[in-house]
Structures are given as structure tokens and as C-alpha cells.
Image (cartoon, rainbow, N blue to C red; front, side, top):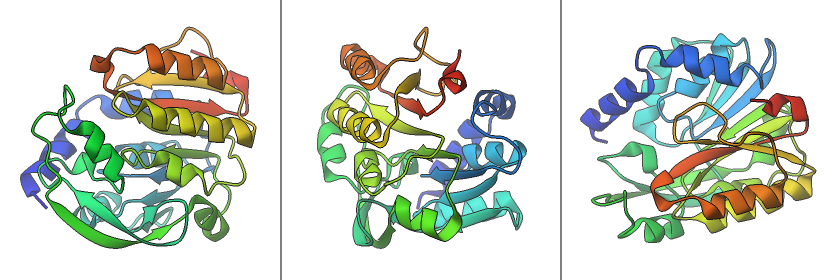
Length: 248
């Protein structure tokens, strides 16, 4: 893995003032003693925020180089469990395609790479290495660690695959979406609606603010994502069983 790329991610996601913004945003989802899953932990900015809020964390990051960075950040924190696996629809093995110049966008989804090819804002991205890694499921993580109060899911176009193996809804969760794969967002919304979620919000990019004036249902969220300009690029959808957690 490109050490310069990891250093760049660390500087970006752990920039001065960012911790306060993260904590202020995620405080609506987590209380001291709660359990959070950070699936696609990357360089651990959300993981550390969840810990500052007093939550226990299961941090899932399959990239070995990022796992080493996470262990250094954690300093053997006993309230965090690191899981070095992919998360998908079934346990087994799968291929992780690495972008060594930009480890943020490693993916197990060939469709994600195909969608990025030639798309505005994705110029120059190259997935130049492949690793075969073990894969687990959200249900298996719950069986091993307990039902989380919040799940953050950011796995580059593989979010719907992961949600297919979630059989019980946590209190709240988020999943990343991109404008190059709006169909994946639609599939995620359908899966979450089937689990009983009725309240949705969204945040664009790394703004850490809600983009809609009020929570909406899954159909309205899908329409909102469909209407976004391609330049919006990416964001996160938040689903909650409790309406007040999505108040602006």
C-alpha cells in the first residue's frame, strides 16, 4: 500500500476541528455504553468519534495497511474490536480490489469500478491490486458481538450486498451512496424499508449536516438521490427507527 496515500487520508480525516464536528453529529445516534459497528473503518475517524461518545466499537477494515494504522490510533483500547474481513451477503471469501493510490475506494464490487470508469470526478482512479480475503456478514457480527445501536456502512458500492444479510434492524444506521451507482442506493433503501425503517435523512460528502429540511420515507429519499447532480458525487443516507434522531 502507498504510505503517502495513507498519510494523506490521515491528514484529511483527522484534520484540526474535525473531531468536534464528528462528535456533534453522531451524538444523536450514540450514548455512553452503546455498541457501534464501523464497517469500512478506513483511517478510523468515525471509530474514534464513537469512542469519544462513550460507545463500544466493532471496527471492520479488511485492508491490512489500514488495520495497522487503526491499531496505532487505538493504543490497545479494550473497548474496540478490530475485524479484518470483508462484509457481504454470505460468509466465505471474496476479492477486494485495491486502489493503492487512494485506499479510501477499495471495493469488493466490480460494478462499482465499472461505474467509475470515465465518470466525472473519478478520472485517473485505478484499481491495481487484488486480494482474496475472508468475508463475514452483519448477522454474523451481531451474533459474535451483540446488536449494535448504530451501524456505519461505507464499503464502496457493496452496501446492498452487506444489507442483504441483516435480518434485524438496529436502532439506526447509515450507508454511503454515490451518484455513479444510484441503483445501489435504491436497493439499500428497499432492503431497509423491508426491515421496518420509515425515517430517512441524508448528508452530502463530508458535510456532517443533514441535507433535507425534514426526514422522509424511503420512496422520497430515492427520488431525492435520483435528482442530485452528478457533481454531488457521494453522501450518506441515515435510517432510524426513531424519528427524533433525524431532527436537523
